[in-house]
Image 1 (cartoon, rainbow, N blue to C red):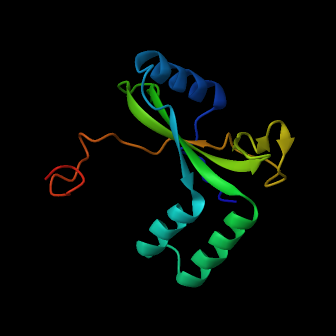
Image 2 (tube, rainbow, N blue to C red; image 1 turned 135 degrees about the horizontal axis):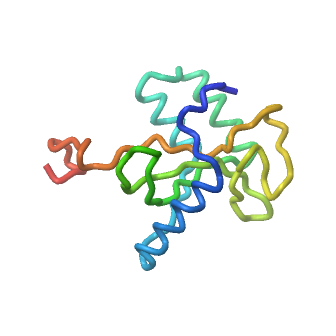
Length: 141
């Protein structure tokens, strides 16, 4: 596992930020389930993961029923402005439900991924605006 946890968010802080989203936007979507194989394809397309490693990772994700959930949130790190965020956690399908992997556990059961798991909740987002691609057809340019 990557020991770099600079973008992790503690579970209690993440719960506050997602609660703020639900309070502010009660009729909006709360989260999105993202197939792990799709994220692996993006990393492969960017040249960050080679074809062989990508195929192996996709096979492992499918075999272990692993995907990713992106939660909508509103919050701020200390000293920063409050902003909209996306918090990302791994999930594992258990009895037909994709359960969040938080603190190395699913529903309190350790996955044994590491001896010292991070929260497993990541915030590495910057909203658009200000970091938009005005020429992208997805942005409306």
